[in-house]
Each structure stands twice: as structure tokens, then as C-alpha cells.
Length: 66
Length: 256
Image (tube, rainbow over all chains, first blue to last red; front, side):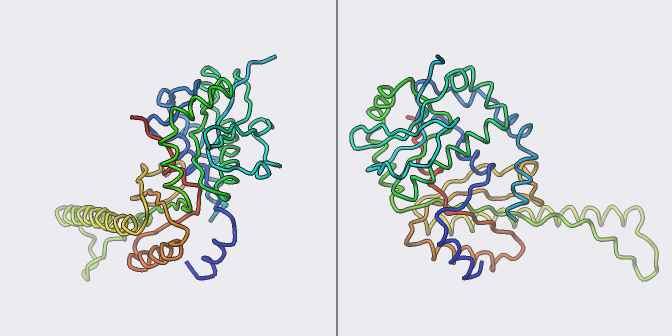
């Protein structure tokens, strides 16, 4: 990373989070602070969600960021 | 009229409502602030046909829906995180009404205060370490005699190549531990996430580290310099760094 790139990092507010990284963090594993209605995300097959639904979108997004 | 619930985005302190102007909530809903005991929970109303248990189970399997919600959620969290310490909630945390939101705040009050203290002035950085894509096996060197290797000689070479790959992988894993420890020792907190599937990211090679680090704003330059130094020290690996992000990996409240 060059000094210019570091400066650029500072000038923007926050970096964009790629969808795959976002879902890593927003879905995660384990039980966390839950609302009244929150379903158990563990009950949803996230692997299926990820692999079936995400591949094309996430790939094109990653390609854009390179 | 459809039954609605309150979708929770994030919890912060001392929220200036101006921050929320111009930021739409999910499905174009208006962002509201539920204040309780010194904490401010940013919420909006959602239709429980879509965000109730049945709706969520159905919708979470739909990429367009999941992406839209994740992006909206992130946009709200980012707007808050640049203003002050923010604890993002997990995707799809929903209460029946504002009274339910307050009950949650009561229940988690101490933990929330600790989380907000922990992330104050700090942001998350993502570091991924990738091995380069495996090069195709070089064409076996043809000995001076011009004969291609056969039989036992061929098998011997195959075995040597396999052993070399295994050794490479072991070296990579050892190196990754060192990289992670180096960064972890220089940051407030760290967390390792499962490596991402190359089918999702399209990356070549192997993701040997997918980690998040909580970095104090004052230490950000030093952290990035360290990443740069580690990359220079390990030219055979790719260190992918991204950030700064809201402290997603460090603000979640684990139960129990």
C-alpha cells in the first residue's frame, strides 16, 4: 500500500463492505442480542443461502472492487 | 392494515437526529430513535408478513431480499458509526413495539455499555491472507537424453511434487499464525472468521486467514504500516486489507 492509498483511506468516511464480508458479520454464528421476534438464524441453512444465492452477485461485486 | 414490528439497526449514545435525515429505513420506512436509559436504538417499522418468523424464513433464502436488507442495515450502521460508538445489531432483530425495544435495552444494558466503551474511537479492519493460485505443474524437465520419464521415475516425481505442495501448505499455515499473532498483538481485539468459499468470492488460491481486528483510530497508520511490512516480508502470500468498517465483529453481544 502506498502513502497515497493510506491518505485516500483516511479521506473517505468508511470503506465499503463487500456483501460476502457483510453477511459474514451480520449473520455470523451463535446466539446474539435477540429481539422479540428474531428467528433463530441457526435454523436457516445459511450455507444454502450463500452458495445458491450469492455466487454470481458477490463475484461481480468483487471484480468491480479490484 | 398489516401488522408491523420494529426492526433494530444499531444502538448508540447521544444521537443527533439530524444524522438520520435522508437515510431511508427498510422498505422506505422512516428511521426512529427509541431512547432509553442513556442509549439510543435506531429502528424502523416493518411489515411482519415479511419480517415475522415465517416471512424471514422464506425471505432469507432470497438473495435480492437478503442483499437489500443487508445493504440498508449497513448504510444505517455506517452513518451512525462515523458519529460515535455504535453497536450494530445482527440482521433481522425485530421487536413487536417500542416497549419491546426498551425491554431489550433493560435486559442488555450493562453489556451494551461495555460494548460501546470497547468500540469507542475504534473501527474494524478486515485482513485476509490468500495463497497464490496453484500454478499448473511445470512440464517435467526432459533429461538430456530427451526421454520422457517413465514408470518408477514418473511416480517418484509425482510423489516429490505432492510432498512439496504439502510442505508449502504447512509453511503457509505457520506463517499465517505468525501474521495473525503479530496483528492481534498490535490491536485492541481480534477475531477469526471462517475462510470464505472461493465460489462466493471468486478468489484463486486458498484463503488461509479471514480475520477482523479492532483498531484504535490513533493506531490506524501503525496498523497499516504493519500490514505493509508483513506483505513485504511474505511476498508469496497475498494480504488483502479492507476497512475501516463499523465494528461489526466486536459489537455483537454473545449470550450467556
